[in-house]
Image (cartoon, rainbow, N blue to C red):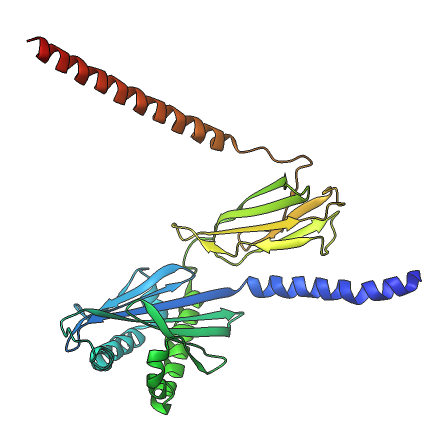
Amino acid sequence: MECQRRRRWFPSAWLLILGVFAFRMTQAVHHKHVGQFTAVGTTYSLLELSGISFIDDIEIVSYNTIQQQTFFKIPWTPKAVGVNYITEMRDLLVYHEQHVRWVMHYLAKNDTNHNRNHTGQLLADCEIDNDIKIKSHVHLIWDGEEYYRIEEEDGQWENLKPEFKKYQYVLDSPFWTDIRKRYMNKYCVDMMKKIIGYKSLKDNAPPEVTVSRHVNQGGSIILSCTARDFYPQSILLRWEKDGKLGIWGKETSSGILPNMDNTFYLQVTLELSPDDSGRGYTCVVEHIALKTPAVYPVPEKPTMEKPWDLALGIVLAVILLLSCAGAFIAWRKRKAGMHVIRER
């Protein structure tokens, strides 16, 4: 009987270990490139065409029709892509202005007010892991509403607004299909590879990690591991018990979120079953800015609220009290002034 248990456990344990190992390897080299192009115009004119792109949520390059120039936000990125690449990209944007004018006219032609401004947007993104493209998408938006999107690997446009269904033959045409595929590979994937292969976009920053323990209303123990202010975004947070990997409860994640300073945030929580004491758990963090995996033990007792939370509440209460006192004093002065005027 014991032998059978070991046989069942052995492949499951190895799958778990291999899965974590594979996740660790791929996370270390994950990057994402997002491009957004926005056109503003009327039925008969294109007022503005602008574009902006981000790699790992850091702004890289922008373009607008006024200067008809590409502006790189990081000084060394033009060297990474090369002068010929930049010239070709600018010339293509200028060339495609006529196509954008045609699209604006075609979509806005039924508007009775020909002077009304309309906005068309194209959002494109691609992701790579270990220098290999894993996914890419294109979204088409008109006046703030998405009407088409496509996952490149699937190759089928999804129509989200029935009134735009009649335009799908244009998107499916060999001409635009070829352009979409070539541009996504060259100006999304290849451009990203050139830049991240040349130099790091930002100095590596290790995560600031906090681990907490709470008890919910149902009596279950909730463990939270939070990593803040790290760069680049690739990171691995995992739970261990007594130094061992396993599936210990219901795990949820916030997903990796960007901060205003181009660093990132991630929180992973673990809800344990009521019969689990919550002892012996640690949060293990792996990041390129850390020399070795960092281990953070879970507190034995429920985590108290942070002092600054209490301090903030006190400050707000004092401000409210002073505001009320100030308003009362001002009211008394006005009342006293009116009384003096009446006596005169």
